[in-house]
Length: 450
Image (cartoon, rainbow, N blue to C red; front, side, top):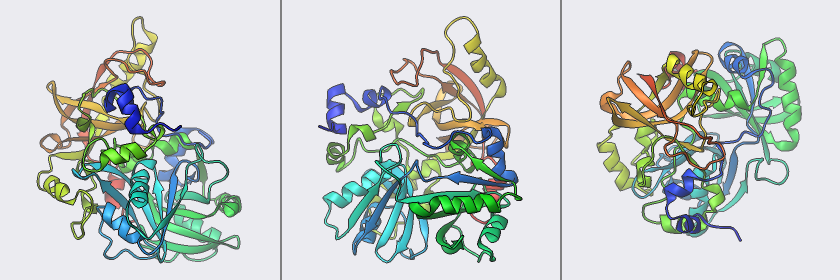
């Protein structure tokens, strides 16, 4: 019998203890780790064109029916007033207290037909409300390749970089029509109909291509052949997993599913195996200390109070009292080197810092300090080859969010948890400097315009 999250919390004693010692790993990308090396692969989306395979690590929730859009509107904070077929948006949901559940990309495929794509957190939340609500809609769930039996329903490839447009025109044999950010178009590649989302990563122009799985290899081969003289680089999971550090997207904040109206029933419904794991130096018995609002991680522009949705009143209060800002923290190179060097010295070392991605739980939450006082939390951390910098994305008090502000990140757990990715270690302090998010000026100025 599948254990629910609610039953697991009761067995362990608290949500924090359950998640801190959960065996769940950080997000796994079940594709080739490196085709060449992750450093050169990171550089490709700045210097030429990168081909990334997104077919295997995300979950698809296909929604159809007369009430599918109503469901999405009831759950999502986004405006749906002008949402049309061949549009997409970053779908965001909060709990009844206005704290973030998660986000995913919502594709408007056809009349009464949608595809919600991303990590499972918000997808589970939407599926729960469909199953338990009064909606004339149905769903089909296509899990990632770790949990799915058989092939994906769709292939999904991403082209990113300054040569992406030239590659698309070469492989389709026609000019690419002007397409707005997060709008879709249809192309023909090697005689096959391919749908495309106008996307961007790290500020570079790009396209997300998708279609029936059976046609995927033929489309991929055509892209590789057309990209031979455009410096096309195949990108593996190591580089791809770190791309968000340049665009400043926080991939997995802890979902606020442990408090709020209706959360009891949701935890009874959700299998504990999908609850994830909690890592980092923040160690509080109060699970709400790990929550963020949409404003804390830069989603304020997507919030629209033009409709009723779960958590609207609470989110309006958060909007009126925003006290955190998303920033990039650039870690001090000497302190990072010292933490790594401790692995080769006598005594208990610092927590291992992996490259290019350093997080060791699905939800990474590290303390950020100024003069010994907590001023926020650090999320995802890793190395950006294009900036030759080790950084993390953080939500910190707006009063301390000015570029150039000196802070410290506490790296490592105390006490050490029992997660498989945690070895015996000691906490260390890493000096860091507050910088904008995205860190790359090109990404800041061009993410939604190129």
